[in-house]
Image 1: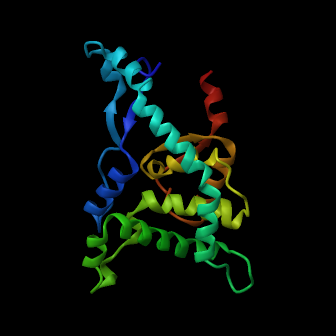
Image 2: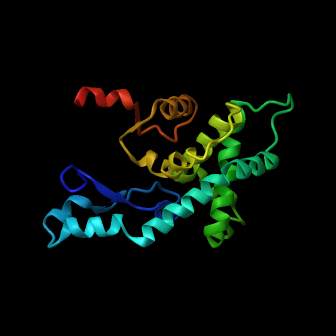
Length: 208
């Protein structure tokens, strides 16, 4: 299926963040695609290469690492909440979402691109946090779903969260209904997904 239908491997979240840093203060304009899987059709032994990769020990280890990270998600969210208190009325509000996204952006950049942040220490007016869409969309979904929505993350949520970074760079995304509803809430209040059309799984019924 992967070599017969239009399919590709996309860049990892850290590669996209690196490109956002390089593009600052402009917006990242690089392709999201890392490798077109359909190219395997014309490569000698291409389909076998794909099978070898999907059944490889390294991929299995990566999947195990994802399971472990997913199990830690509730504790990580609790830690985040302790560092970001609600409004004066004791409740989280939509007005706090941009500040939460800004704070998370600074944290991620501090971890991977401290030198870049230090370049703007003398004049923060030149820093544009809106450039870092890959981080901001993650922050907004976390805030809307778990802070405003008051939900507790499930281990299965980890997979959804790990793909968010790519959404602002896709003209159209098709996700399950609950995710689509949260993303549409974000669209109504922030422009991080202004160039993305969000559809739920019903969108695919027209292609059956």
